[in-house]
Each structure stands twice: as C-alpha cells, then as structure tokens.
Amino acid sequence: MSKTLLYTWRMNEQNHIKIFTERDIGEQLRELGITPTQQRVQIAEILFARPQHLSADQILAVVNSNGPIASKATIYNTLGLFARKGLVREVIVDPNKVFYDSNTSEHHHFYNLDTGDLTDIVAQDVMITSLPELPGNTQPAGIDIIFRIRENDSE
Amino acid sequence: MSKTLLYTWRMNEQNHIKIFTERDIGEQLRELGITPTQQRVQIAEILFARPQHLSADQILAVVNSNGPIASKATIYNTLGLFARKGLVREVIVDPNKVFYDSNTSEHHHFYNLDTGDLTDIVAQDVMITSLPELPGNTQPAGIDIIFRIRENDSE
DNA sequence: CAGAGTTTTAGACAAAGTCTATTTGTCCAC
DNA sequence: GTGGACAAATAGACTTTGTCTAAAACTCTG
Image 1: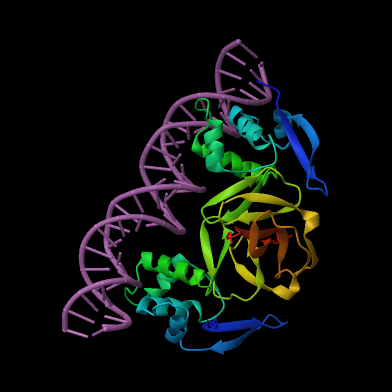
Image 2: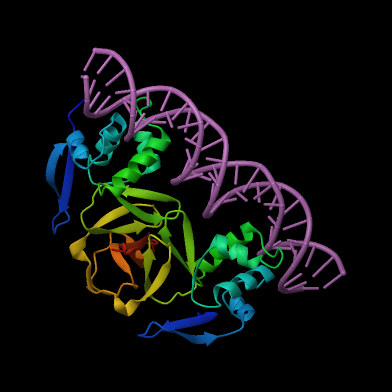
C-alpha cells in the first residue's frame, strides 16, 4: 500500500521548510482510499498549501470564503477522516479547540499561552534519552511534547 | 469547620508516592492569599486526598454528592484560582475536557486513548537532553510530555 | 443511465465552560 | 457582637466546539 502524502515537508537546521514531494491531490486521496470529492479536495488544498496549524473553524471560514462549498459537518467529517488516514495530526494544546497540523513529520510544539501561537520545533532539537515503560498491555500511539511559553513582561 | 489537611507529594524512583508536607487546608490556602471559604476547602479536600486527575465535572459531582454545596461557576472559578496559584496543574490531553492534576511535582503523563486513563510518569524516567531555543521575547511556562498509548489488540 | 452505496447538508442537539446580575459570606473597625 | 465594604457564590442564560440525524445530492459501477 502506498503511503505517500500529498506534500511532504522537511525542515532543515535553519528551521526552513523544504517541499519534499508534490503530487495530484485527487490521485493521492484515492490512493489512500479516500474518494476525492470537491469538498475534500478543497479542504486538502487549504491544509497542504504549507505546513500549518488550523482549527476546524478556520478551515470552515477559508473554504467558504468565496461562496458556500462545505458545511460544518463535512469539515469535521473530513478532518477526522484525514487524521485517521495519517494525512494530518491532531494537536491538543488549547483547552477549547483542536488544531490540525498539516506537517506530519516528527516534530514538537511551542504553544504561546498569551498569543495562542503554535510553532514547530524540529524533532532533532529535542532529544529524549530515556523512555518510561509502557503500562501493561498497551502500545505506543505517539508522543506529544509541548513547550508552553509566555511573552516576556517588558521591564 | 473541620481541620482537614493539605498534602504535598513527591514520587521516588520506584514511582511510589511520599507524603511530603501535611498541613491545615484553610491555613495553607490563606498563606497563598486564598480566602478559605467552605466551597474552596471542600474542593481542596477532594483534590488533595491523593494525587489524581479530575475534571471539573467530576469534582462538581463529588462535592455535591451529599447535598448542594457548590455551583458549577464556583467549581470553575476555584479550579482556575488554584491553577493560577500553583496548587493544581491543568492537563490538556482530551479534546473536550481539562483535567486538574493535584500532583504538581515535575512529571509527565500516559494518556490511554482507548480508556481515557491518565497516569503519571516520574520525571526521572524521561530525560530530555537537548532543548530548543525559545522564540524571541518569550519565557518558559512549562513542558508537557504526553505519551499517547492504546490497548493492545489481542492476537 | 439506473441503482446502490457514499457523501453532504441544515439544523437540532450535547457538553464544556463563561458571564451576569443578584445574593450571600467574610472580615475588620468599632 | 454589629455595620458596612468588599469578596465570593449562585442560578441560569449564553457561547463555543463538536456530534448526530434524516433527507437530499452525489459517485461509481455495471
């Protein structure tokens, strides 16, 4: 089974983004077993334009900015589907909304508590050298590392 | 009003809990600049009975299990206050509710996606040997490391 | 191009959390 | 103790994020 993504990015040491692969969205969706409807392609186009963190709300607004294309239910259905298929990663940092990260390569996040900004940290910048033992009868499903930060008080 | 105690814990290398300090709740709250009202003391008693992760909802249910003592608004106000004062730690792992962790010593979490269970990992079991540079004009406010796990499929 | 299965839709619904105006409680001076 | 100023609690309306439902619209295959 093909596991290639619509776009795959990589960040270099300067934290710059490199486009790694680029292919037809509809074709790619189909390879993942996702019927490429108009709504799904549009949502994918928005998400995969660049590596970014968007909430369902923001995607809904963008996708319908030039006339109604997708309903709220479709946005949620599609994001859930993309997440299950590994196209996007759900980032849970804000107590009242989920962000969908179009960068699925291994990385972590800064979350600015004052501004709400979510920014990437390349995985290489965080070295975990010791891992805890998993509770009995469980398997790993992912690690989230969130560095919560605040604006400096000016002095 | 009963003289109940506020506990502080520490975990050793075997992941065992040690009671660290034990003092009158009202007195302790007052030292933190928190007026010890009946509601706040009751909520503190529930939270600090042992190290645990409770949602606002659960606390509301427990606190009012023997007659109405605190309203929903008070629960949220109090938990927010306790969090700002450093008495509890907000744990954001579940997209639709915040957990309040009565263990504020440095540690991380397993989050079982299948059962919703949240369990502690002693800080010593996770060694971070490389830290990213903070974005300009920000200061650290905490690190959350969440190991998402799943139940093994029986085979 | 017909029929079956999928997807989308509007809008009702649910749950977590916030807000507001009013009442109640706390604390300090006397 | 009592009065009064301020702090905290309350019920319930409200907001926001997300889910559900039943009907309509699509997509695909033969």
